[in-house]
Image 1 (cartoon, rainbow, N blue to C red):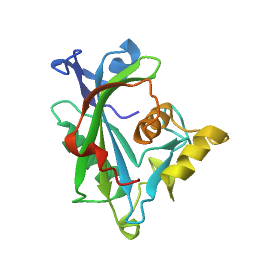
Image 2: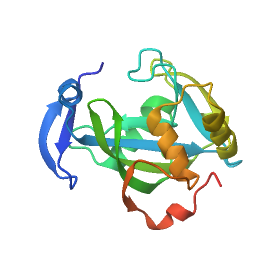
Image 3: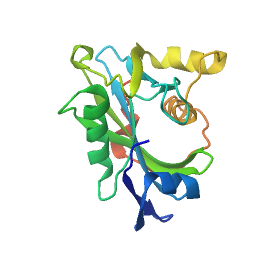
Image 4: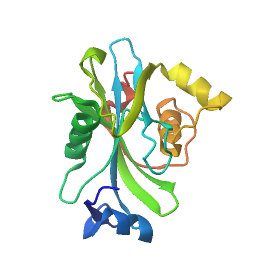
Length: 186
């Protein structure tokens, strides 16, 4: 696991401390995260299969990009850093869709922002250290996978897909951004 420092936050998303990532997860401290849905012009979502070393959910399907927000970093900075580190892309125009709070796994409680951006699949150069493989699915195909089961999908990705499709979710919505009704996958 990478040794990085994260901002510990209160219920109102104010920074109250800075602690290394391992301790944040050991103690279950509230911290920040980001997720990015990268969509093609044909409205297909870049879905990543997490690397076998990733915890939790090794080898499971995940958002295009999922990142912790490092200490002192803004949500959008973390999203852009993740897009570059995981998918080898720079300059992707992203827009925030929703800010939410979710329990990701035992001792992993986050306030996260979900972003969306359009990409050219020919430009993607994913990092094989973090990402085992990528593929492109429609929202309908992903929702069918959720209903049918069979492939492991990260719990947070399931929640994000359900929210995106207008289904009931267990995540606590903190803020929905004005343009979130114009989602690219629909």
